Structures are given as C-alpha cells and as structure tokens.
Image (cartoon, rainbow, N blue to C red; front, side, top):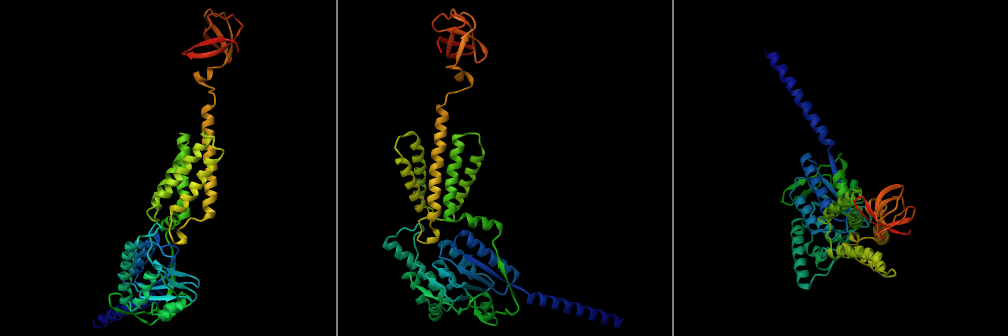
Length: 434
C-alpha cells in the first residue's frame, strides 16, 4: 500500500513538472504584437489599435509595440487610443519609425502617453496645435480655449510619465516640432533605436512605471514579434476612409442614381449608385466633410445638365468643371496634406464626370425628341394607300396592314395616297397627299 501511494505521488509530481515545463516553454516563445499606424488617425485606425491592445491583454503579452508614422488626425480617435493605452494591462511601447517617419499632432500625444517612447534616427515629432476639423481658422477666443484644453490634457499625461511637460506643451501652444535627438535631450522620449528589434533588445530587463504607478520589469529575451494586421473589414473601411475615395464615391453615387433616374429599369446603375451613396455617408462619419463642397459638386452636375438645353457655347461646362474642382478641394479641407484630395485624382474625375453627364443627358433629350415608331403615336404621319373609296369612310392600307379610315376632306378615291392624321381606337383619320 505504501509503495502504491509512493508511486502515485511520484507520477503526479512528474505530471506537474511536465505541465510546468510546457507552460515555461510556451511562455518563452510568447509573441510581442507589433501594431502599425501609418497615415491619418481616424475611427478605423483607432479601432484597429484598440482591438490589438485588447487581444494583447487577453493573451498576456509581455509588451505591445505601436509603430507610428502619422501626420495626425481626429481628436476623438486619438483620445480613444490614449484612453485604452492608459487603462490596459499590457505595457505599451510607441516607436516612431522607420527613419523618415513622423509622429505629428495626434501622433505626438500618443507618443507622450506611452509607457515607453522611442524614435528612430531621422524622425520627428510635435506640431500638435489643434486645428478645426474643416481646416478653417478659429477665432482667437475659441483657439485659445482649445489650445489650453489640449495643453492641459498633454501635461497630465507627460507629468505622470515623468516626461518634460513644459517642453511638451510647446508643441501645442507654439506648434514646435522636435527631432529625435531634441526629443531625447528634452526628456520627451526614452530611447533612440533604429528598429523594433533593437527596441525590444534594449528594453529587456528594464523596469517601467505604468500610468497607475505600478512598476513592471520587462522580460523580453527570446520573445518573437508578430505583426498585427487589420482584419478584412477594417482594411476595407480604412480604404474607404480616404479623401480621394470619398470624392469618387460621391461621384459614383451621382452618376449611378442619375443614370437610373433617366433610364428607369436598368437596375445596375441604381444599385451601384445606392451602394456608393451609403459608403459615402459612412465615410463622412470618419472624415470631417464640408457640406458646402458637396453642394458645389451638386451645382456642377446641374450646370452640366443645363449645358444640353441652353446654348452657352461651353460656358456652363466650364463653370461646372470649376464648381466641381472647388467643391472637391473644399470637400475635405483640412490643414493636414494627407487629408486633401490630390489634383491627380480631382481633375481627371471632374472632366470624366462632365463628359459623362453631358453625353447621358444629350442622349435622353434626343430620345425624347425622336418620333415614336410603335403604337398609336407611331402611326401618326405614316403614308398609306386607299384600298377602297372613302366617302368619307372606307379602308386604307398602311405599313402592310388594312385599317378602317375616315377621310378628313370627306372623300378620297381608291388608290390615292393618304397620310395618317390621328388614331382613335382602330379607326384612322387621313388626309390626301403624302
């Protein structure tokens, strides 16, 4: 009995040791998620970053690296990312890279809020003065209020992270930017490293203080990195949330719905136009839209239509193209260059829309003016031959068919050529002559 108990004990101990070794082995090969935020910060990219942080928390990742290369973006999306960074379980390291990248405006605040802030050589950060979502100028009182609010928000994060809050707020109040060396010397960031691998190697064994004051020692030796990509839904929505795509979706909606209205029953243009309209309205929830720009584009379409009916010698077309270009320039009129519509997209699209609209409307008007060839309307004006004497009624042969007819003049001899004046039921009213 004693031997049996001893055997069970030894086997149980061996089992626990095996499980512990397995867990240790899996821990040794745990992955460090790397999230890339390239381009404008908006709702879709913010959702991608937040989802990656939540997945890292669930997996118990030792660190999450957020690689930044952004000109800035929307304040609400930036705050969504920062709020998640400050309240997650996983330590966050923000890396501005590779060389040539930047973390301007919203990217600067995200960098300051990180547990670890690092930059690659040849990068810059700062220029965080808030601007209107439409890119317009705010009055002095409103600008001061917005600047002070943003500066206080930044100071609270910088001070808690042990960074130079006074220098950091210059990026907001004075629009100042910093190279990686200036940021390191000014204690805005913690490290200058060339890439993510060097960042992880440098951080191994380093103690970092989380936003709540707890201290964590990073154990990163032997850990592998894993790039966190957007899922298909996020990738599609991120593609839609681009100024050029926004403009093309609006044109697609106008072209598709306009074709369906002018040619009822085609279905396909109407379906495409409706889909484009829905996607355009969705994109307006991500990118701030100036509706004056939308109205100018609608005016442009109206001028193209008017060109067909009014003899303007091309003036209406020129005015329509100008209105469309101005509308597209105002559609997303942000001070961030990446949120403006490229002229290489704008001009060809405007010319194509002008040509397509004028051609379509011209075809519609020509079809409306064309004489009917079927039905009662198609009979009017047809020339036939009297099959019998009409005095005033008789029979005539029109287009190879025999019709009862009434002579408008009261009499027409058989064999005479007659022209159809009107149709009433199955009886024609005819007059002499072709």
